[in-house]
Image 1 (cartoon, chains in turn orange, purple):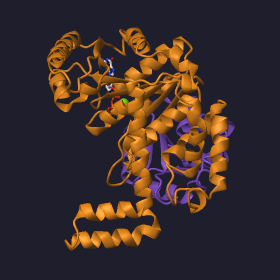
Image 2 (spheres, protein in one colour):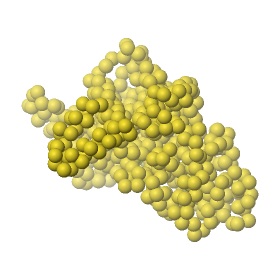
Image 3 (cartoon, chains in turn red, yellow):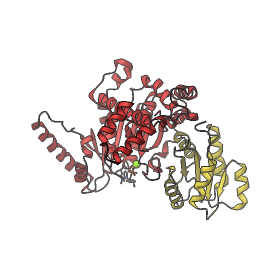
Image 4 (cartoon, rainbow over the protein chains, first blue to last red):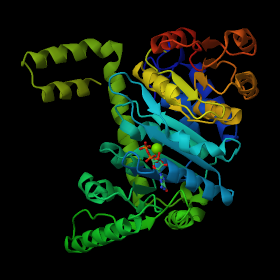
Length: 345
Length: 136
Ligand SMILES: Nc1nc2c(ncn2[C@@H]2O[C@H](COP(=O)(O)OP(=O)(O)OP(=O)(O)O)[C@@H](O)[C@H]2O)c(=O)[nH]1
Ligand SMILES: [Mg+2]
């Protein structure tokens, strides 16, 4: 968010009354339930405009009530289908649900194909469901800043559950785990996958592991194997006192196609989240370790962005270029150069 | 704004089961630097409108082969207007006879792409006609 040149009219942050005013209006309307305003506000957040930041400042105190659920897993694992099934189940109880589906941007063209909605199109007429796709866009703050901000907006707009789908291909699942209250790792039952998941560290971030496509042959067995493997991990962990401990996720078998296991998954999610405490809102809200970690991730994401923005400021471009030249000529090492630039900020 | 990607919804209203063309277009526009939201086959006008609204897209691209364009396309445009999406660019492609083009444009479809249109041409059209104001 923020940043010179991103505010309407290209003004500098802080001097665009129009940006702040637009943010204020959008925030009020979005929080009041206007879906178009919510959609436009999410665009401001995505584009990291001054209006988006102004809105977020207003809405932040109202957020913190929703259960933010990260859903991650390998490409094609069944995340979107599972999310759609969860949305359907939550709607049976009349709970408002939002989905943020994040897909990678091409680092070369900046373009993206956002295709998760394909599996979620049956809620078009339901005003209690809001689905938004987001391209990762590769910002300095990573997934954390934009997605957290978007989730906070959806939270403030009154959605009880905010499901954040990301493809687990490395960094992103760690990032989504940092921003979610609960992380669900989706694992397809095909053989070999569980070993890969363990290698990739995907399972380390899981609070709940879902073996998807439970209607397929071998799914039951894959779930038992995973359960066994994760228990072994947990026992070893007990011996390693004082070291960071891996989580001990529940393993659930779900078929989004037959619906089997969906009720249980939602129940498991609900157990992990003290809704009443959250409903208290404001300063009465308990601050758990997860929440603190999320705030830290968010803060450092914003800090990196702020720093990158300032370095990109045209008035500083000459300094940056001079430093780069000195490093290229080996007159100065990159560490000293970076320290000097930071000091000058 | 210069470096903000343009968001395009690619939807296939109607009952036909072919989305090869739509997928090729989606991929092509991605390679042109657009953010493409793809919603798949058999979209009702309500689905298209709701997706366009929630995604706050700049462009709605409709691919239609079923022959139902004269009923579906105007309903989609009307739905977009009802939701306050007045500044969204609406384009269509697929199998649309020349004889219907004028009526569809009258109904608010901004541009109809005939067979043989290249992705480059679609991209160029979008870039030069997308809503200019940056979010208003
Ligand atoms: N048999 C069966 N197939 C499923 C189930 N869930 C998903 N699939 C299929 O698995 C494929 C991938 O499903 P998606 O939900 O799109 O998977 P995803 O993880 O969201 O995929 P990406 O977002 O592309 O990474 C599709 O062909 C689905 O139809 C299930 O419960 N049973
Ligand atoms: Mg998906």
